[in-house]
Image (cartoon, rainbow, N blue to C red; front, side):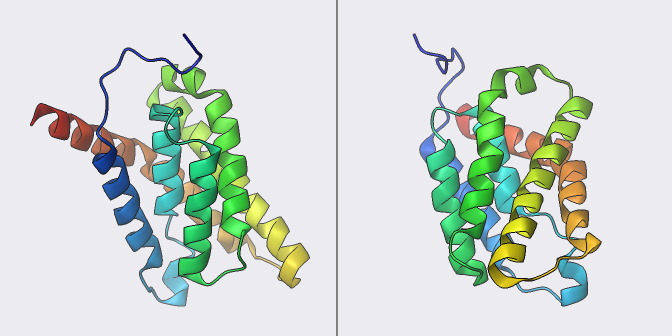
Length: 166
């Protein structure tokens, strides 16, 4: 028995793939520049959810691949999101059992810290690669993503239970 063995029911792989496909489509939608800073990264939120729920399926390798897809889809430097998602998921996977025991308020704080860590890695990488200084507005989206977390996690939980019930 390893550290990731669970007694919980198996979640079908198509459910996970469809959730990531929808998240990627939401991240790739074009919005006005003024609205862009207010939108949470749906791929990062979905990655956090599945890294907490099923770390044996979606770990740092999946985070790296999804980061590369986001880099290609958003036309940013290749590897920026891959690096930031990998760092974010590393800290979540290390403590996923402890995080899952928290209530929604404490999970909200953990998700906020993970999303802020993700954004901080992106800001530092952009500063070194492109000499691009990011304003404080880039830290609004992670905080809004954390506020959306309870509703988002409940939605994914309902969708997986609905799929299992059928």
